[in-house]
Image (tube, rainbow, N blue to C red; front, side, top):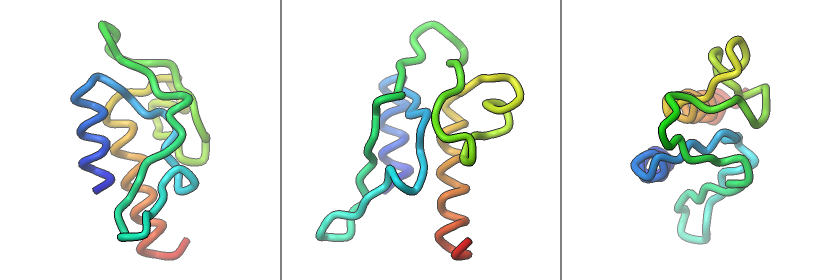
Length: 88
């Protein structure tokens, strides 16, 4: 569900830029909901956006080059899933 949510955002040209466990919720039916779109931004004609969000979950390109791309959101989602599976 989270991946579908990100795919929808990305199809609209939007990068979330602040995915983290605190921004993922479950509703009463167990469906995931993404929150906190305050830092989200449309890519428009740029190939990347300036980094934003929580540095603990920031991908390498965000930390080293201050860049966020669509793949950055996917990387952070993978980190969240790994944390959920391992309990770390």
